[in-house]
Image (tube, rainbow, N blue to C red; front, side):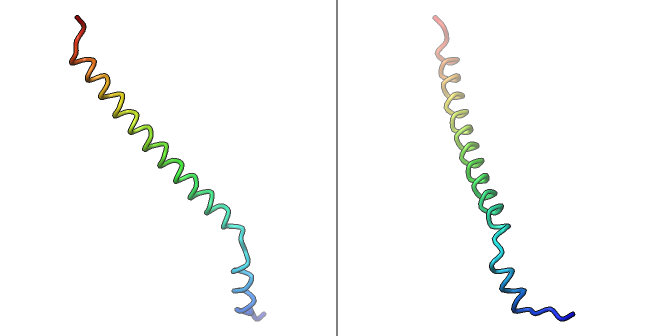
Length: 59
């Protein structure tokens, strides 16, 4: 049984079954990074508002 390397390379180059998985993985990673960045920024903003409220005191 002889394996034709040229045919194998051509079949491998045309195979796109893993491409969608890679694209979705990258997309999920970018969305996750955006959500983490948003939550971190919102947390910093809320923390600064609570600190300002705490230092202002209630009169």
